[in-house]
Image (tube, rainbow, N blue to C red; front, side, top):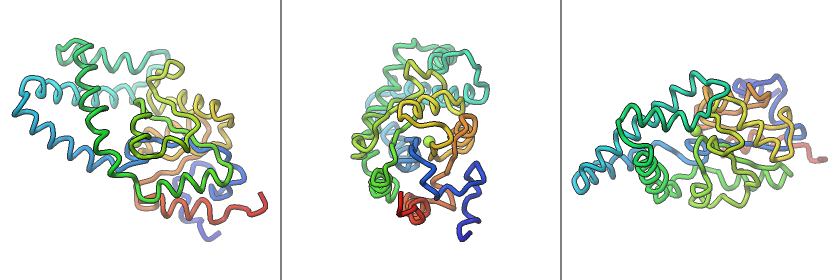
Length: 245
Ligand SMILES: [Mg+2]
């Protein structure tokens, strides 16, 4: 068992490198496919610069983004079963900031979704493209599940094609934030896979990991000490792939 010490983050007792038992992988996007730290730092600099040219709108954007992100985390910890989480996030942000939902949507769209696209493509996590290609070669179907719509991010990273399924918490079929299992289960169904043969890869154990466990799926964390990039993860997952299957 040469890898026994490296499967601490895998949920079940079976080694995840036995890819004969995995037919689908669902990946998180932000912080998983690309490095979120440098993107956020550069966006903070751009917000600071915009404070000079558009002070009112930019100050509102800063307040909206902060409240919007905080509310995601609050809703994540409460996870009311029958609530529409993205609607709750927008409504709470409007109440807290005193801004209209339309203005918040416009500011979030501009500063959290559109402007970062120019940066995201510059920070793919190392080994991403090779990892996805190797998975496809092994006959594994690929999907993403993110809190926010991610089509444009995938395009910027040059990895839209490998994914046959793109799921967001904002999709009408989901409307739940991680770690609620709804989005993970929906993604697996769309991939034609069962939970027990689906692997989740993410960068947050309290969101991606807890969601995978709630859905009955295996989980591997990326970005930490064990797998800082897709290079060691690719080696780990695929080097022991049975050659007969
Ligand atoms: Mg993430």
